[in-house]
Length: 269
Image 1 (cartoon, rainbow, N blue to C red):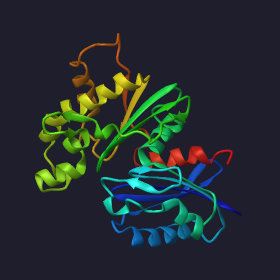
Image 2: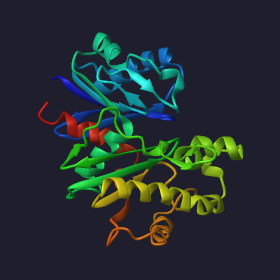
Image 3: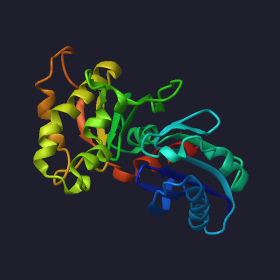
């Protein structure tokens, strides 16, 4: 029986799964290889493992970066060696012809809109805070149409130093600054950085006018990361341009949000 495959290639980990009756099955998680040649070869083997030898009829997935209409990775700050990678053409030549590639955060936003914390809302804003900072807006259950997608993590928050939100709070930047794994950094650092992240979220609210903001990613946790309660409290100190702020919610789908977003795109395909 033909199999539908979904995937999420992030800056740190890659996840691959099959879709059976509209649900994820056989989820495989492996480290993302920095070298695209080795990474693509391993990816094909991952697909074979998940499909269990069955014919693959469709592949839909996301990667951390900007992808053009042909499925070529044009820019990826956290996977620099993958820039220029012909991801969709490679998969079409080696697995199956029916391939769709999206930005990973856009698929995570779609997943939360259909199956997670944004379900039932017309306009959903999503931000993922992990190795980098990504995000997207979903309107009426569809990723909002843009030319290149969304890059809220690259909004400039420090004009003099041209520092972006991602450079200030993203996991890779924190690792370089503190010389340790982001999950080993003291909680006091995340409390001090909360107003910075909150400013980025506030800017997205002003630009996207969402009904709900969903925040996910590996650095959203109460023990060694950002706290949703602290973010909500910090937002209350921002200028009140709108009569009320949207609800701020933790991701419901967690690390699997991107897979669920790809799963949503497999329906009726």
